[in-house]
Image (cartoon, rainbow over all chains, first blue to last red; front, side, top):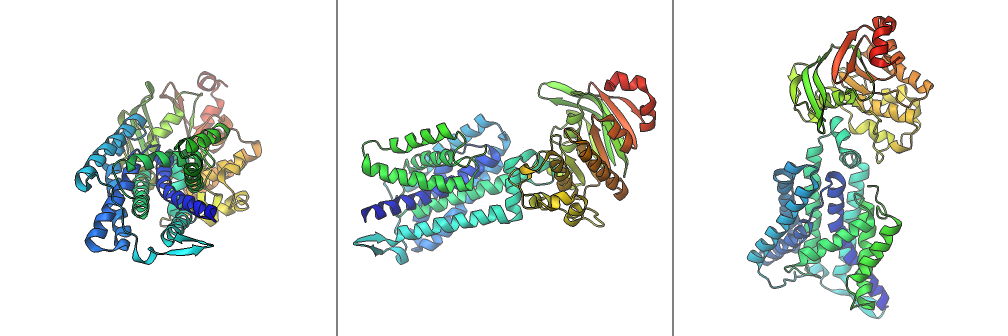
Length: 283
Length: 231
């Protein structure tokens, strides 16, 4: 029964990684920007969420407002900073690296250095029986939310006209533009949605992982592994990669606690040696 | 409707177009001929805003589009069929013909019309653009540009790599464009294709227009053909 618990833990963590990686992957796929600020969106989401919960007591409000705030932040970053360096990889990467440090210091200044754990919403604070063990309902809800988000994103990308425009932009941004698609608007939109998803992950992860200085860097590292394993520019890759890395991380910590990230990076290296573009990558 | 006035365009570090001017009138099929590497594709990219000229100007229906964003140029009524077709691998045939669709008053090119014109595409609506044959991809590249209902269509070497049957099919399309009053700027290597469909012909060499004539004149002018086209 303990294996069921560990597997569920891995899957729920994998869902958080999916939320992070989905945006990271789409942003790279469309704009070829390696957004090193992506982990910051996650952490800002968690901190802003914690403040909203502290002020209003409503987890639901935090879950809606914090991602929107971070989405706006992402849109501003894209529109007023990254846009100036379109397709110039080094300036863009350095810029996002700079934002990573600025945001980290601002967060330290506003929320301090002590770890904050967000309270669970009342409706999901209990646990249910799985065989002879108890399992927190919050983690199950987390898995459900992850699946729902994946479904919505899939529907948006595969079944809407805007989604088709987005895929056209990822395939060939230049031609998409020459056919009348406003690719620059897509850029801003994808950046905002990517930031929103990361912040959603931050609020959702708040009750189990918490928020603390340095978490931005840690989750960014894992999100990059997910994107590399799953394939850049692929939502499906982000989901499968997220679950894979979530499970590897969880079981790795159980079987080889002294090896830490080793259990993630070795499988990543093996996958890349067979599929250099990742499991579902085309780029 | 389209006026290119004395444009100079660099591509990378080299200067490709030098003081190039040309004009397309409404409903006209204008051919552009020239050897490889003389700047024909760069000319198309300059007009479309993908490689804006360094100096000179480009007017479309009186509006200065010289440094406009490509999607805004497209929305003014310019369609683009790029060299090498460049269909979107992640889009189905149906999506190709829907994603850029724009209806205008009296717009002749609709999704249904494209299927009627290219029955092959109609049978493969749910297939990926990448899975089509070269000829079908060329029709799809034309179709996705046409459903936006442009008043001028830029076609960059559409017959490149096509089987003779497909070239005929393409000719049928150009004929239909002419009948509908859609102007075409046609860059080509195939002399026969241009001679057959164009109303006027420009010849490009070393980034400049070196000759301008009617197709019938070019057909008999073996001196010009030998000097600039190598035939």
